[in-house]
Image 1 (cartoon, rainbow, N blue to C red):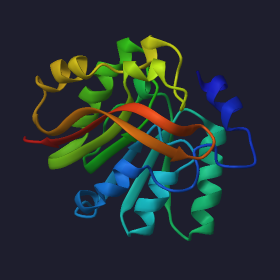
Image 2 (image 1 turned 90 degrees about the vertical axis):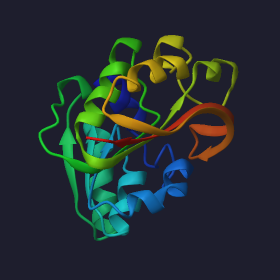
Image 3 (image 1 turned 135 degrees about the vertical axis):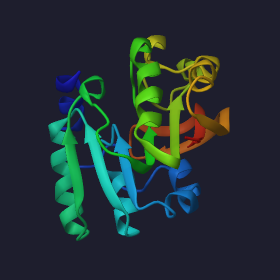
Length: 201
């Protein structure tokens, strides 16, 4: 998986663009209340740099050292510091608490998707927010990006089953059709799942 993403990111441009994900940007009012934010599967850093530019303490985790190198370079250009964590999600153990955890388009196989939500909520401080956007299984019918393998797409009912058993309240969990304009990889109408959780304890 690391080799796959390293090859994908091995370009002179930012494959998902430099602007933050729209859903993250739309909910930045929640994030600006936070001091410490973790960006999971952050890739080249478009969300992390957006939040660091706002004055937040940001940490970025990704499996691709190529993507993280590009993130570091761009962070220097923006005169911001972003803590880097180079690891696979399955090896990551939450060892500190964050006011917010964000994640966009993290393509995980089904067996690891439940772990993503469990670890993310575990990593939140009380009242902290988890904000994420994923491709739904219906994305298989769209040509706007994402895996062409159902096992790497998300089912809203599976997510509901998982998060219902976690120490959080669901502020948003919806499957929506949106129009993407993110670099050259996410362009056009897409079926996404948008989620906002708040840790309760």
